[in-house]
Image (cartoon, rainbow, N blue to C red):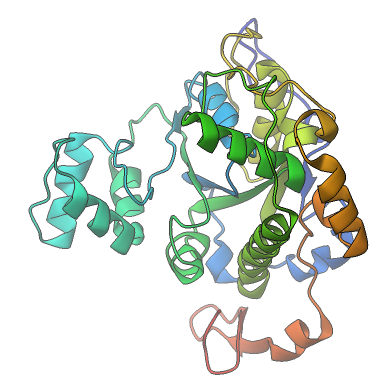
Length: 344
C-alpha cells in the first residue's frame, strides 16, 4: 500500500487487526485447512472484482464512499438493486445490450427492462464491467444485499468467478434492524440525523428477520466452503466504525491478502466518510418499547440473537458427509459438490 504522503509498504498483518480472514485468522481458523489448495473455482490469478456481501445497514455505504477516494479502486454500489439502475454508465449498458442480444434503454426514465435483464444475467454484467474497466483501476467493488439476487444466482454468477474476491460484512443484529426501521420511518437512508428518534420494535418480527439473515449468511458462506472459495469477514464494530483512513487501511490489508495492491491511502478527512445517522450506542436509547422487547426475547431465550453477531458458517458433520470430492479432468484438482452435482 502506498501512503499519499509518501511511499512505503504497510504490514498487511498489522493493518488487518480486527478483520477476520477465513483463511488464517479469527475463530474459524480451525477449519482453515479446508481452503488450502483451493479448487480451480477459487482461481489463482489476482481478482479484478470485490463483492461485499451483507445485510442492509452494516456500513457498506460508508465503506464504498471511502473506497471511491482510492484512485486504484472503481467503487460501485448496488449493481443488482431490484428497482434502481444508477450504477452502470450508458456505454456499459450499451455493451451489456450487445452481449444479451437486446436493445436496452439507457435513459433514467425507462430502465425497467434494463433492470430486469441486469438481474437476470449478473454474470454478463460483471463480464462487461471487467472488460470496460479503466486501465488505471486495479479492481471494481460492488455490494449484494438480501433481495438483490437469489442465493443460487450469487453462487453461480459471483462466488464461482475466479476473478472475484468475496468479503462478508456483519453488524450487531439489533443495531442493524433498528437502523433499518429508522431509515424507513424517515424515508431517507443517508444524510439525516436520527439520534433523537426512538422506534417501536416488534420482537417476534425481529426474531423472524434475524433467522432469515442468519440463514442467508450461512448459505452463502457455505457455498464458498463447498466450492473451496476463500473469503474474508469484516464487522461494522471492529472494522468500519472508524476514521476513513483506518477503514481504508484495514480494507486494503484484506485485499493485499488476495494479492492486490499497493493502494494509495485517502487523506484522514472526516468529510470523506458518511456521517453516522444514529450516534446512540445504548439500545435503550434507540427502542421505545425496549422493556417489552427485552422480556419477550429473554422468555424465548433469544437475547443472544439481538446482541451476538450473525453466526459464522461452520461446516457440520452432515456438510462434510454431503460434500462429494470430484476430480477435475483437466487440472486433476478436487472440487466440492452436493450429491447430484448441485451446489445449493
